[in-house]
Image 1 (cartoon, rainbow, N blue to C red):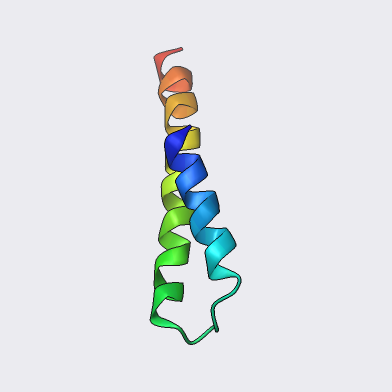
Image 2: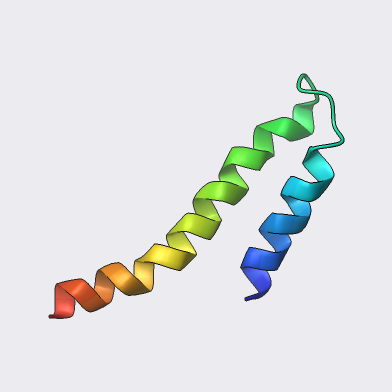
Length: 49
């Protein structure tokens, strides 16, 4: 979806940044958001069952 693509673009850009760049702080958040959007529907479905 849109969010997954956005996160992937963020990570792709981040790989060119130095590790001490302030923007690197936002990369783990994009991973968390992507994981949440991916697994939340699955979790809700499992709980419903």
